[in-house]
Image 1 (spheres, rainbow, N blue to C red):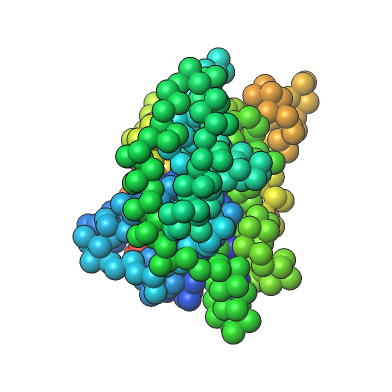
Image 2: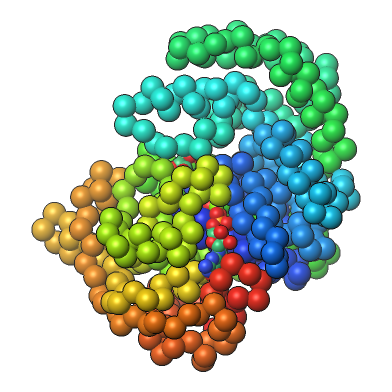
Length: 423
Ligand code: GDP
Ligand code: IMO
Ligand code: MG
């Protein structure tokens, strides 16, 4: 069985939590795009794990894989392995595999990301992890791969071939080009390559073989549909395709093999970085959601912008991903707000539309049209059955389900594993 799970909004919907919860039913959990711009939080009792690269199934028995469509910062990965080891989880090559073709994020990618971002008059607000520049090199066929860093001679050859180009790109943006061949940095990558080399595997083969053998594979998306490099709110997007079809393309699994596509939908909406967010709240309700939902970036610590549930954006996401089931997260955060507003459409160019206009500058002009629902005062974090939710919360969930047109399979009312139930 092959299941794909993706974020339906602008990231941080709670993918990590739901993957961890589901991982017990999966033999393999695999990341297929993005890099350490992702920050997936898994909470187990008092322990909080912030995972940037290692799939969120790592705490259970699943084998975890990093696919060739990702961009990998080897230092971040090594730190993550060490962090998990300290808390008792050994991430050995039996536990985790990295595809040989995975693109490596080099120090010059991070430098170029930071320089480019500071040179922009209109910022994107990237995570400065070098994601975009690593993907540029993949597509330009100027990448350094996992296989390259695992072999010192290959790495040195590749770097000397690429260095003039990278040095001049950094110089052009006003940076220090010596970073490209800096002896200490190169040595660091050689050591990281030696350390991570034993993890190399053919992810596409492993995933297809597992599916053929009747095992269960879960593809864990990073970011969210509206950060997709093709279908998102360009230019305020990430540099990979974040939607479900990307899992097939990036893992080399045929679309005929997909059994389920799970969408993670936050009960409201958040966004980190720049770009339109039609329902954004700059009032007490917005501040309450931010505070109660602890809406601060897992990767950069930046405050997340918060807004009411935006149905047109989620509808588009349902189209882009073909969801079969939805996990609705962070319902508990909406307690003590009255009314609770659902954006059902936008006023745009004198009309009311129920689907986002395609161009980002048009979306930025959209004024939300709201349907108000009564709120509830109860704390939901101890609720363990749908029927035990206050009626107003049940109505809110049922209304969202009706409007999204996809059944809500899971409702999450807190960061912990137990704070989730089937609808
Ligand atoms: P991801 O990037 O999609 O994995 O999401 P993040 O981990 O970046 O952000 C989600 C945050 O919300 C994390 O701190 C989670 O622990 C937390 N979280 C997940 N589900 C719930 C929930 O239902 N209620 C509350 N209050 N917090 C949640
Ligand atoms: P997870 O997987 C939320 C945003 C950045 C920025 C834009 C481009 O935790 O949901 P990048 O560094 O990718 O070039 O930045 O994308 N962004 C995310 N926002 N959650 C994420 O990941 C994100 N990954 C990137 O804030 O606006
Ligand atoms: Mg996150």
